Image 1 (cartoon, rainbow, N blue to C red):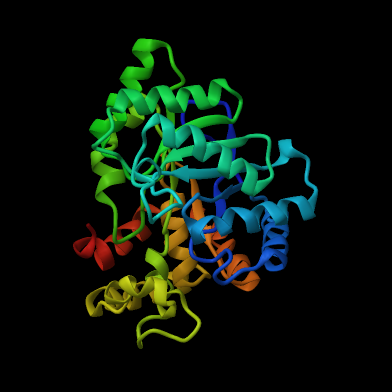
Image 2 (cartoon, rainbow, N blue to C red; image 1 turned 60 degrees about the horizontal axis):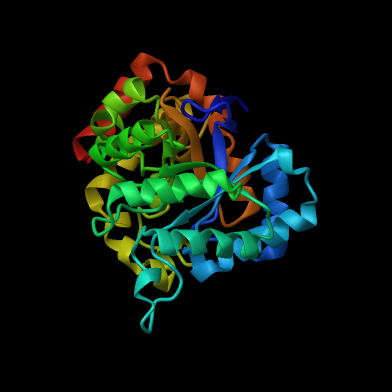
Length: 326
């Protein structure tokens, strides 16, 4: 495992990391999470991603229980969470959902700290942009969160390049804590934001990336080529919105074209897809998602494939997938 700086910060994160979206609480309980986090750490992973909204706050609780059971020194691991959607989805709590205003953010961090049982969270993200709140208000609130010692670094997730740069400029102008990282979707079928829209930000502000969905929600494993298998992410009722994309005939045909390439390199399609994301020098870490220990261990095999992605191999991968990429 290699470790990379998170953007322009001095923090180093493992090139592969482990996230909890979909899996924790829904498919993985505290006992299984403890086993998986332990295996991840044994494999060199030091960054574990979460969010307030995952499983309605239960994902943070599960991860917190696992971390307490493992009793790792706090310096040994990096934990994140993300804010935007809130937990109170009913009633008149208008300032607790779909917002990045100061009132919500100030209380959201306290809720996450309590659920995870931590004194501070390493990385906090604005989970989506909020067009209803001035970016300046959000920047001040996130910077204050760090100044109060409740978080160490802040960033964004699925923000436009223009909004990220606007936030950075506001922080620069007022001598506030700047956004350090962005968490975008990035995989063989979803490329343009990372490779084109953000291109100037890598040079101008040294933006770091903690990318999610390297397997396109499982499409790039090849297991959806014959439909939706029982027990898969696509079979979960809450994930039914993914089914159309997972069973897309053209993309599954492209996955089939990747299989011989992966075999020649000594791996499988999932490992090849993860390695392809990992080989991008602008990616600080690739967030993996796993519901079973064997799945996590298999995904770690991507590390062996990364140095094998020569220009010729990358050309073959592009020939198989590029025309279907967004």
